[in-house]
Length: 320
Image (cartoon, rainbow, N blue to C red):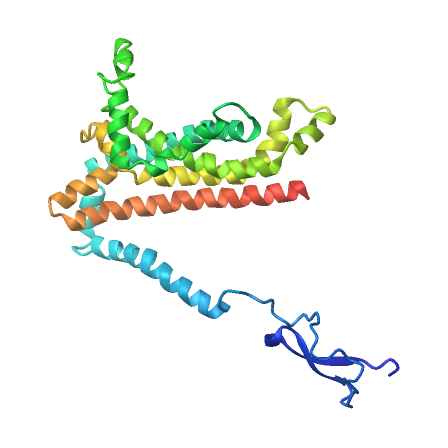
């Protein structure tokens, strides 16, 4: 055949089978020596997938996401402006609502920050060390997931109330751990810890000991190894755990109302204020407060996601 270029006609739907072959100049090519109907590698052949095609899968994804997420959000925004912009502003930015926003977001940020620190330590210990009762401790981490929030609130109140197991001793030091913002933070720390631990555990396990041993062989100390090697590799997962714990804490209701005290301008969270508005049949006011909470939460999570993407790119550049 000499130096003649050849092109093959491939059926991508048939697993990449050669159906025919011909010279580029148009003349026919004998196919007796070609492995007809045999699998070949082709840039145009699509990989086989056990799930439906992209179009059908995307359609189901958009439909399901719209039905479960987008439509409820649109309904809340629409209902909040049903009585006009003035009614929305009056309900959403009243002095009582602003105090509730400050408490909800401030306590959620503080609780997520506490979980980010101590959740990292818990995940590190569970992955790197073997000790009696380790599996039991690892199972207890998931307890806030399985425990009903109302039960968690009652249990925390029984422990930290002024007459509780630990609260009675704190009262001797004039420390009040329940029925105030401190109790809210305690409840939010309780329900947010598993998000940080479970997000970091697989990343720490995958990291292994090799980076630490390599840094030690080069003369780096423990703090330098952690700051320059360990923490940058764990930062994207750490931010993800922080964001999940924060998002969970912002909307928490059941475990908080029992230990908060629920005093307006003191220990009233925004989700409780929404319930109060609903009990007063002020559905527009409840939707307005919900819209503010939703918008602020989305903006904060967007910032965290941007930081997470930056940390991921930075970690990839460092490994490269």
